[in-house]
Image: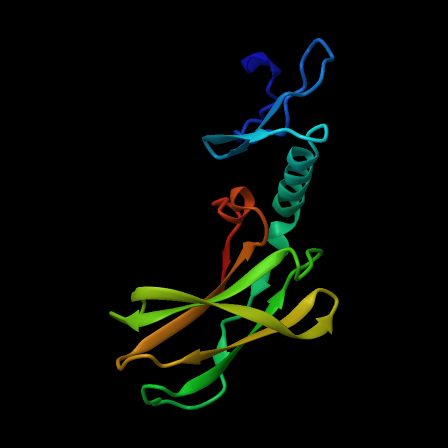
Length: 172
């Protein structure tokens, strides 16, 4: 199968490769930006077909995600070892919570808008508020002293080829 058998759109995204002679698909390439990853094909490319369908669904619906800035439940200051609760209201649109990972991104504040030593904490759905709106939450423990800041971001759940696609991330 040659380069002519690849189906690539103008953004460099591709699905699977169908031989022009109508034969069996032997390889698949999933493009994320300029990088292509070949997938081994078994069961008539079932995994490749599934990944392509999932990636297309996420690309088509990702712009519907909205994240309000996360809110902590207690006033500062906190002492080392103390835990506080953080919530964030999220609109997923037509996506489902099992397709989207919400993370709290936090770290030391170097200045008002610059965070260093960033870490992530997985947030979970605390409440389904209906119509694609969810309340996510997590607990954070103060591990050391200093000024901290946080925000939230969404990324796709699933295979690393999809999870790390640069166009599929939304910040609060």
